[in-house]
Image 1 (cartoon, rainbow, N blue to C red):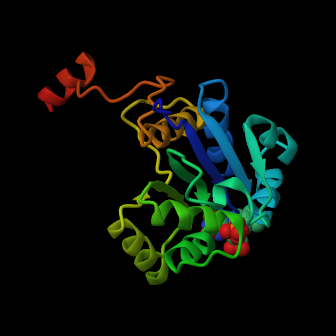
Image 2: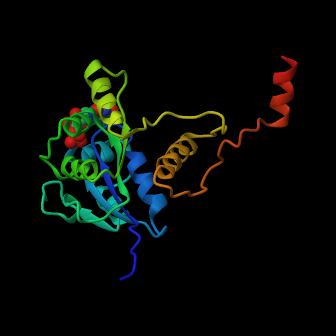
Image 3: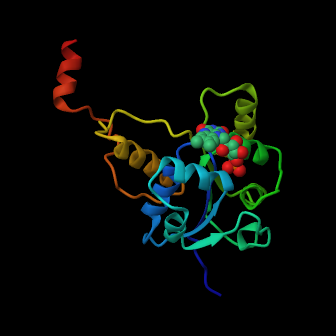
Length: 203
Ligand SMILES: Cc1cc2nc3c(=O)[nH]c(=O)nc-3n(C[C@H](O)[C@H](O)[C@H](O)COP(=O)(O)O)c2cc1C
């Protein structure tokens, strides 16, 4: 018998604003050796075409495998299908609630439920603002179960020049969660630039 190393990642895209995060994730993983299994919700498709230049077909073309939202018989619906885990980017409050309450009425909810029962890694790129108490309670409940709650909040220490820089940096940090480290952007190295450091020390 030989050991097999699973390099499969389940990717869900739901109907919160920020579908570009799911797209960028697939773009970055494309050709990286990670086998991606994509499921998009109905509202992800609507939001994607509303807020980006991408078509659903194009996005599906970036994934290794595509699964239909209604296909509860897909491989990712079973715990015996070994994966690194699952990321939902972006994750709507509806999908967050469905996962927090164990509903499995579509393949995104079911696949996330499988990840939880198998104690694998689940990363939720939750997007809403402001949050109400229901959202916060759902996030806390899942966080206590080990789910990574990763809202797509920009960092400024890496001096983003445009929106693409912000999207790339956040997406790189999402991928980091799975111990896949793609150096696509400047990371914080703990050192302020000399000029800024001098200014800080003066002030
Ligand atoms: C343009 C647009 C932006 C939306 N943004 C958000 C959002 O940021 N967060 C959220 O929870 N729902 C958002 N929604 C609402 C969700 O799409 C809606 O709740 C939907 O039922 C989510 O279903 P899903 O989780 O199956 O994709 C947005 C809808 C549209 C049309």
